Image 1 (spheres, helix red, strand yellow):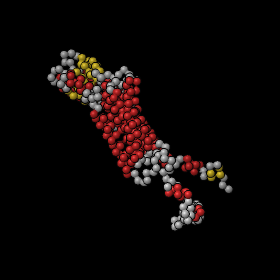
Image 2 (cartoon, rainbow, N blue to C red):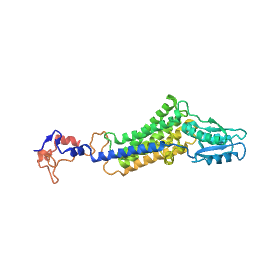
Image 3 (cartoon, rainbow, N blue to C red):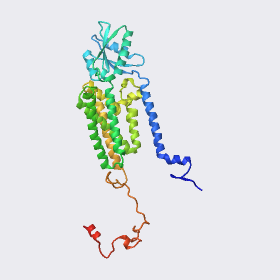
Image 4 (cartoon, rainbow, N blue to C red):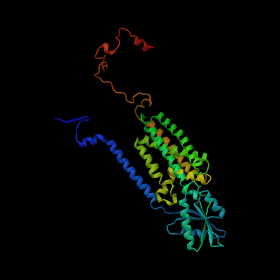
Length: 395
């Protein structure tokens, strides 16, 4: 005799496992494990051994030939920590630092033994410190001292120049969470063209609000970032829109798995390569190469430019963000247009996406070839004349 429980017949522990964890759930859990390992590898790989590599440095001197000779000596340092280039004069060197063409400038004084090093703390405190350490050590080898001047210092409320990075990370989180909710919220169907347009419109509205609130919090409220609030607002809206559009595009291509792909791109690859804690010249080659092409990196660089460099150098990052936003929107719309099958009723209409099929054996169900097997009384009004209900229906 088979023993039963309230849950039904017992099939053993293996059957219970199969009932509790479906194949789809098991595959998704394996995907989460892979995402977790990628997260650990990416963050530790980017941050475990930062070091300077070809940091752009301008070199100026009043006497002809001295700047070229000094630049050549700095360029021959072991490991190539600097990428020095001679410039015409001190004014040119200062201009290049403030325009973000270089990350530092050495002004050589041939009449004395102390030179001047210009750095920009607003571009990242760790980067300014790296330039200082390398140049001071190189100058000491030549019997010279260095005086440090920060021409674009970080604000008092911007500890180690990280506020721009955290602001952009917050915008990115809002972008992919908003898009994910729009895509998989209770009752939502896979996007047809109308739903895709509505979701993109809702994302745009959210991006405008999120960009404004983030800029106000980082600026006037917490006094962490100087610079133009409207400019930061526009940047924030573009960051949120770009990340959200990427998430919708991946969801259109791969379903719920696409949300994980968006996290892989933005969080696992984008955040450690964004130049936040360690700007690009201090990151390993892979991360320094991919960072500028991803939304967190482009957003962080642009936010620092707005806050400390009067917007210099923002054109490239803004184009990157715009490309992601437009590309994500286009892919989302294309996926919706190529989606096959019935679009289903609108969400919230109270109608089922797939109404149940009629039972061919139930009374009152017409047979394929004629009237109901139950006879005219089961089928409805007789053919002799319309009923009151029929008249109402006709009206």
